[in-house]
Image (cartoon, rainbow, N blue to C red; front, side):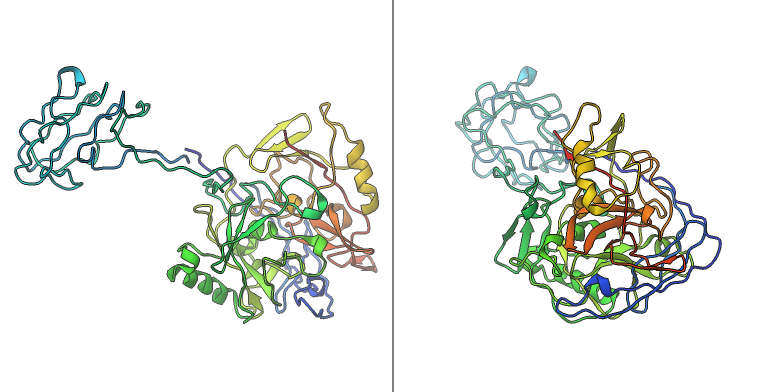
Amino acid sequence: MLTCSLGGVGASFTDTMLRAVALCAMGILALAVSACSGSGRGDGQGSSGPVASGGTSKTGGRGSGGSSPNGGANSGGVGTGGRAGTGGATGSGGLTGSGGGSSAGGVVGTGGSVGVGGSVGSGGSLGTTSVGTGGIVGSGGVVGTGGRIGSGGTTGRGGAVGNGGVVGTGGATPGTGGTTTTTTTPPGACQESTRGSHKWACWPVPTPPSEKLPHPQSYTDLGNGAVRDNVTCLVWEKANPSTQGTWQASADRCAALGTSSYAGFNDWRLPTRMEMASLMDQTLGRTAYASPPFTTTSGAYATGSYWWETIQGINGANLAWGYGSNGMTSNAYSLAGTNFVTRCVRGNGTGEAPNALAVEPANHYTVVNGETTDNYTGLVWQSGFSPTLMAWADAPAYCTSLSLNGHTGFRVPTLGELSSTVNEARVGNAVVLSAFPGTPNGCKDPKYWFWAAESQSATADWGLSYCDGFTGTNVGTTANGVNTWDYFPTANVRCVRNGP
């Protein structure tokens, strides 16, 4: 059984941060862009981020970062005429319940061999609750070849069948006539994650198909208003309503889909920051959702991820992560804003609540001599990063020339891959520091930005700031020593390669 653990989170803030940041670069309107600007200053850590209408920027304080199902036989035992399987030993504890008389003839063979008449005759139906009154052992019951009753397979004093009569682990295949209930998965079918986290990528990161990388985005239209992601196994709402509203209205709408069993599922919810990142394809331009299969509207796409300060109750923050229609993400969307829409999602088991810190999955990273392997996405990362800041155009050559532990084949990561390294349980340098030591701690300076492989235009290249994990393009400006949040003409690069 895999378990998750999470370290404590702390922060240091020394004065109140200004909260006004531009959102026009977010591309929130799919067909039109509003012009706006903003700036702010941080404390000792620095802070800044794209801010939704009416929202405030973040304080750059620092935090600290952060089953396999048991199979059993169906209760109810052997069906009418069922013969014991060869070697299919009954697990200990398979007692019949108390409260009824023993059926005549139901004899346990010495040493666990099946007695004559081991099959239940008609009239002596073996229900999951009781044996019929006067249940008679049917004549002609066939003894399964080699079928033996395991220890503890004794007849109880009553008619009710105990729930403990499970087949012991390692039981052999049933003999002729024996029946077994199994769950099989068709070849190539999705295996949903059960790692207990929705805020981390516990699956391979989908990549833009045009990049010709492993795990290209792939979807199956289920024909019922839902779309399955064939890489992450998440099931998404195909077309979200265009009506905009508050964050809570979006959350309530997703919950209502579950109540109504929309598309046959009852576990619909808001997607997290990372789950939304898995849908993004920044190579598509100003609308970063694949179409088909998705239909995209204007508005800020809400997520089920509150920002760190909001979770910690710091500075009265009331912010959540959100996405523009162009795939840009910000931690500064006001929960009270009224321009939210959402694309609901379901699947991959249970996970963190919106107001809970991200729970890092167990055995997340393996670090060996400057290489960090993500054991869930399968990506192998450069633990460090480039020794100097560089232009976006120079990043591919740096990664191509990189050799670590005799390994080559490094490349500039996609924005989705880069997003998978963000630790939402920290700010300042929002990573797992034991996996990525030395990551710069701060905001609003090029040295806190890292290049991604995608470019939005000839003059706008994508990057991610580890201040919190927000993304943007390098179209910002600087004046009188004050940078806008998206000012990074140069940046770092942390290279990645495909795992074995």
